[in-house]
Image 1 (cartoon, rainbow, N blue to C red):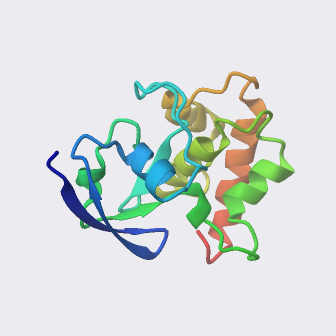
Image 2 (cartoon, rainbow, N blue to C red):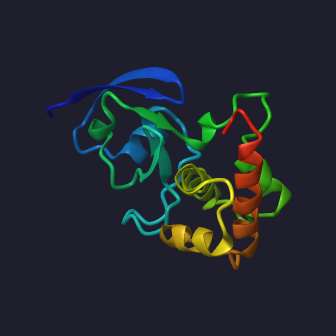
Length: 163
């Protein structure tokens, strides 16, 4: 089988690997790097549980090939706060405002939320948040606490150096 050599930065760490060119980024992160915070929910780019940041922008890693990340920087939910460090302001907002229930969608929601703030600003309104979450599904909540969490997290990011 023909393998592709990839080199990328994942959560601030250089990574080099040989992968099957058909390997999805989510598979590479979960199976090769054991970064299991990135979830696979639908395999069709519908649910958003697999969202990571590629060069600072939210992408669905279940429909992104690992070879497409060659030479780029990937950040996963595990890369938001170092071990023992305080949580990222968005993670803390989800904790404080009960923006999760089962937690399966939470990593993708948080990664999407940070992207929303980077694109729309720290004073993003609830209507915009709801529209921007269109590609992220949660089967447990009514989204009210998720929206409240993102709103609070956006404001907290304005005051943080982790934003």
